[in-house]
Image (tube, rainbow, N blue to C red; front, side):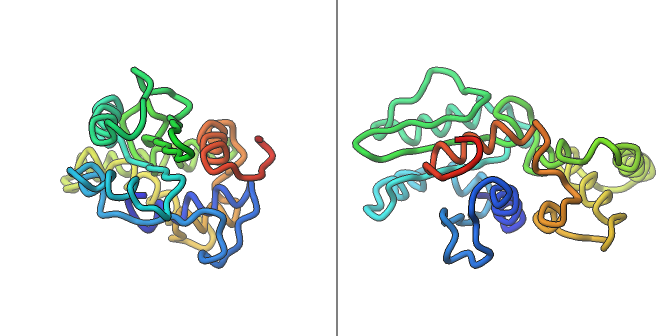
Length: 209
């Protein structure tokens, strides 16, 4: 996982589908943080994780950002060459491979196809009934950039989401808390593929199994 907010968001999302205690040390899956995709995709990082004798299942969640998801997929396949056999092409349902009782999973946010990040994924969990306020937040971010805001293209999804969250009650919640408080709707159809991938990868009990 690329960062703290991503970790909290996934834990909150999965907590609506499978038992997930608030105490992270009792969680069914240990979600670790890394310093962005650059750290995960550097030479040697994944091979060390895979070789760790205490790791039987390793899941990797990356942001596509402005790179095509296929680029990250190809890089992961290259780094994990010799450990697992990967499908030729990336799947929109996420990737799960297995060899010698070890499992490896890969999900590239938002949906293994589009450019974007965790915040792009979460925008599709904005409840339909409040979409006008979401559209207005997006318009405000666009106007701010037009007026000279230094927000870069790669950060627009974050700016959109956090602008919208600033208007909720209470204002300025993290995405993870917004999921917990049902401000973002974890049960919208867009979440289903990721949830299925996560449950299958870690062999968790859940309503989608």
